[in-house]
Length: 378
Length: 155
Image (cartoon, rainbow over all chains, first blue to last red):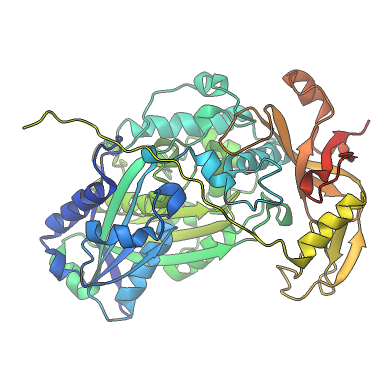
């Protein structure tokens, strides 16, 4: 069967950009082509990850996006969940029609309203919005159930923010990087009790570009291709009340990805994971559901230090979404970071051990409604 | 060359939308005007969903049977919202909650109030997972979700 590789990755600085969105997009995509020694004309197809209106102030935003990505005269497509953009790009290669595909995700979070008003518009105007729902509110509901059902403590949840913001100090492309203590997190404002301000992701500017190639082409383009080894996705119901918020669809998504990658013992076989945790406690819940620890053991998992940069399975060495939250782009950021770890090109936040297999996770919708898992290998 | 400056354009737009409720949601709100909370029962999985749906999203078949559920239920989870956000008209602090009404098989999203919400420590003592709550009706009915004013803790 045809194989797909990530050959090159480029991403923006993490700082708020003063460039226009189109120029901001161009710089990073120009950089990834330069790294690969390619011109725009050499790329087979373009897949974007970006969001309309609420996250960009533009409707039908792909029309605006194409020039900055270099799509002139090319086939293109777009998804608002950038992990989907990635898999659509992989499918274009698997179809045999293209040898190279450029997947890019972009947003300038600094230019649009806060996440909470934007995510309140996920809800309908006749039931969820009038009752006060947004993404943070549902996350806080999920956190309270998580702590209550499994006796996970607020301090254990806070440790995720301590770890990830600390990791971000070593990532030049991170937005928020701070050495914080558990006390700092615990005493930050209780904006959605039990969620504290430092446990909620910021809102970031970010462009990330990932160049994909067929096996034959990848081997010519780079000495260190990173292969797609597995993918899985699963959706839950829209209404939070129709679900058990602690029994979401991530286990199925992970099972599909692990099955495709031939992974039986994820904690032993994976070397690093980049997990989408817009709220600190979610990293613990997702780690359970990815099989890194047992059900309800997320608190013990973070206490054990296993997920630290020097642990047995480092989680979010980049600082994760708590450090950098370019909303629709965050899934592709996880994939790009996982690829950099395998290439050994993550710089100061490169984990100590050799990385042969890495997991990238993305989620969107209230309380992790939709889940996707990507496995990459050396 | 001119000194670099950070030029931005500010914009705020208002655009009209008209979203259809459809027959099932409309009927649900008409029942609320009569102070009745109605769900629909799936003929296949037997679950009662509140608010009602015209189809079961799990079994993917039509849901035809209306069932009245209790105005009391169990608090499944809650959040103390102390953060104002644009377009949210409820004044902070408020409590968003998920309630399992007796006789239903889904969580109903609404507010918990009827207690002093400014005293957070008291709130934490009064509002508990697994605690019972009861609907308090708005005397003025408009045929929308806020015809239920809120849910109050039952001793």
